Image (tube, rainbow, N blue to C red; front, top):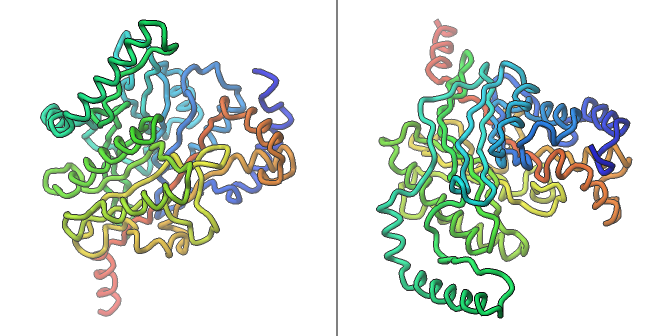
Amino acid sequence: MGEKEFSNDEWQKIFDELATNASTYGLPERRTGSAVIGSFNIRKLGSADNRSPESWKFLGQICQQFDLLAIQEAMDNMEGVRRLKQELGDEYNVIVSNTTGVFPGDQGLGERLVYFYNSYTVERGEVISDLTYDRSKVNQIILENLDTIIASKQDFEEKMKEYEAGDRKTKPRFDPNVFLSFIRQPFLASFKIKEIPGTLPYEFMTVNAHLIYGKSKDRWNEFCALMDWLRERVVQKDKSYFPSFILLGDLNLDFDNPEKDYSKMESYMKNIDAGTPDEVKVNFPFLEVHPNQTEQFTSNVKLTQRYDQIGLFFRDDDGKGKGFPTHSERGTMGKDPLGPDFGVFNFTELFSKAVTGKTYKELSGSEQKALVKKYENKVSDHIPLWLRLKLPENEMKRRNTSNEGNN
């Protein structure tokens, strides 16, 4: 499979280290009374032949730790999805979107968005759909930004004249500099985490998203458009199939300038529910430092970026939030083994320790680069994120049990 991949001996060391110290690297355990929900961009999950048997085995061992897992960057070719399903076994079911990101017949890389879920703990709801802005909304956006669009058109035409005259090497692309539609339509599905005795189920909608990787403004426009849609859907609780939403995906958020970019994101997130009822809550746990960590989690294998995120959008009408953690509860994360909690499975650290005997930070720059080359294409260039939710207690059941004890 190529000299840059792990050797058989290296893979054996990796599997031995994983079997011994999985929790050290953040791989979540499956625990009765809680559910592990995750997001994982698996690079170009397409042909079943473009990964070694060891890579498929490794990916399978990761994905088996999730009750519900959203996967981004699956290709039009479904072989890879089916190969991963084979690794997971019959207890896992799969939902796959249509190809998005390219018009049929046009040049470009289309992708599918995927959900794997454990049928023993998770039940699929009736609603499965793309998430889109309808035509009337797009027309409104065009009207409100018409001057910007016209200016962009004029700039495009000038650059095209230069290109046709041979004064410009690359053919320009028209960029209206406003949000009109998602580069890839987010994939929405309804799920229920099944209750166990003494608990209540979770019922929620999930949104699996892979937003644009381009100019910072384009990324921000898409992100804000998705946030607007989610916020408004939660506000209209009586019209939604399930009133709570979990956003899972590669949002390609730009943190190249961490101090500036984070303050912008923090300010936006703190005001995202402005003008909505007080009970509407928004929580992005990965924008905070975990109580047991000293710095924020990263989600790319080079451990430099935070492209991937998990976001909670829900209502707290009764003051209890149906079990979803609010932003104000961030300090309690990880205190209860059943959750709530969040983290990443840092397989870069696993690979480094198993193969080199050193932590990733202890490697030189050239050593880090050589290590990453061995797996960024054949495993992935992203690492998975996870959120653990504790099943809410059944208050009625608890009170009945308490009353029986007093009789």
